[in-house]
Image 1 (tube, rainbow, N blue to C red):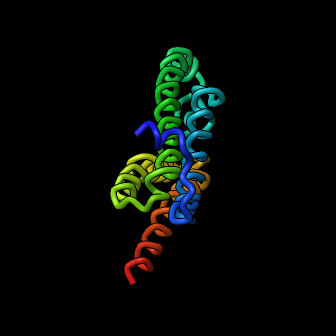
Image 2 (tube, helix red, strand yellow):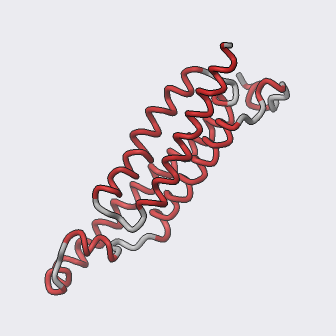
Length: 156
C-alpha cells in the first residue's frame, strides 16, 4: 500500500480520461465553493433578506444574532463542501482513472446529495447563484456520463 502512495501510475490504461478530468474539475469547483463559504460569504446576502421577506425593523431586531449564527453554519458548511471537493478530486485521480465500478457508484451518490441537491435547492429558493451551481452540478453529471460512455465502449 505504501508503494502505491509513493510511485505515480505510469500505465497508459490509467491516463486522465474525460470522465476523470470532469470529476477533477467538479472537485475543484466544490473546493472553490467551500472556500467561498469559509472565507468570503457574508452572513446575509440580499437574496436571503428577499427570501425571508423581512422589514428593515425586523432585520434590525434579529439581524445581528442571525448573522452570528449563520457565520457558524457557513463555516461548517464550507468545511464540508471543501471536503467533498477534496474527496472528489482524490477519487478522480485514483479510482475513477482506474475505471473502478464502485468509484462511479460512489460518485453518483455523492454528486446527487452534494452539488446536485445544492443546485436543486437554489432553484427552489430562486437564488441568484442557481445557474452557477447548475453548471457545477452538470459538470459532475457529465463526468458520470463520460464514465458510462467509456464503459459501454469497453464492453463492445
